[in-house]
Amino acid sequence: MGLLSVNINSRTKAIRERMSATEPSLFPLVGLEAVANTQHQWVALALTVAPHPASGLDAWQALLSVFAWPDMGAALAPLDCIVTLADPLRMLPEHMAALPASRVVLRIDAAALAEPAVRKRCAELVEQGYRLVADGEPGIHAMQTGVKGVTSDCAVALPSALALMSLPGPHWARNVPGAARLAVCRAAGMHWFSGPYEREAAPQGGDGTSRKRLLALLGLLARDADSRELETILKQDPALSYHLLKLVNSAAFALSSPIHNFGQAINLLGRRQLQRWLQLLLYARQMDDSTASLLLPLAALRAAQMEALCKQLGGDRDRQDMAFVVGVFALLDVLLGMPMPEIVGALHLDAEVAGALLERSGQLGALLALVEAPLAERERLDAVGLTPEAFWQSQLQGYHWAIQVSRNL
Image (cartoon, rainbow, N blue to C red; front, side, top):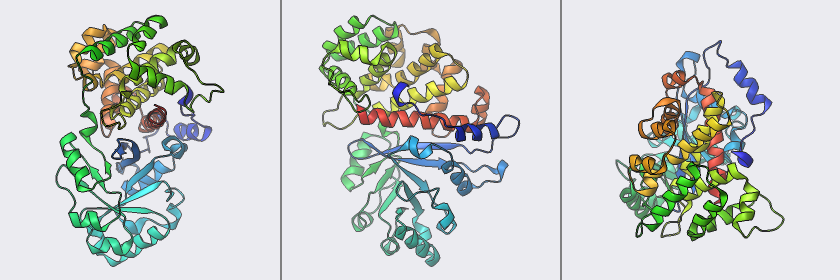
């Protein structure tokens, strides 16, 4: 992942050594879900932390153990973390250092606000700088405790108009199933969104020329073509050309003078990084309303996490590149509006890469299935030789890179 990779410091290594194969893993399974604003920009990450009965940790204790992980705050910055606080009375002063108010949004069950002790504790948390969102219909108690927003499973029902108007927000629509429902949520006054809708991107269509150009560029990348061949295709696509030059002139490279041509850009990035960035730039094409790409950060996340997992399993540099390609290409059917078998056939990919994309077969296919799952299962981690803490580390690396990519493209 080059310039934007996450460093694993000595404290992280020490934790991983303590959680060795000689004892059951004490680290819980963690799910991360991106939350975006109306412009499709990531603004927060919602955490789901599974209880770990084998270690005696319930969901709250497991959550605290996750936030104690070194590098977590730096890896996910500057995004907020949304955590579910099932029992606000368990949030004690000694927990506040682990859950900084500047970075944490607390999700509270609206029904719990009926209890006076809970309302009092929530009001104290608001005084400490925490932002609270009520899950469900909050009623008058929300305003009394300083709750700012409301959230609900919007595949089922939207919050009431009264709730949306009486609280300043942001209001979070969870489990938004598709573009049509997203439009309904936005019209109702919701501000943050998460769910399967992110995969419902408009295909890059037109008269078919753009699609053919994309496939030609992907084919050149897949067979490690000469840089001059890549330049020829890039010059035919103003959008990709613009994004490539924007990338190399971004703050990520801190250049003393701007880059104006493809030759300089290729020399600066180097062959390996050029291929990776071009694969991601395919997702950076702006939609008609100039909002950010829904698929770009998701593709970057999968690619970076696949590479990290492959490295953890002992894969060499070439195999890590294959894992990256599997991750970044896994959304091409959505991007291009084409069946994946047709795309794989046009690109003449390596048999193992093709199997991973088409059938989730082989080691790379198993890793892709893990990366795509909302919350990994211990049995599936065991099957590929990964521990929960190793998988969590790969999640941090993947999200860190995806966050940086989406800010620089």
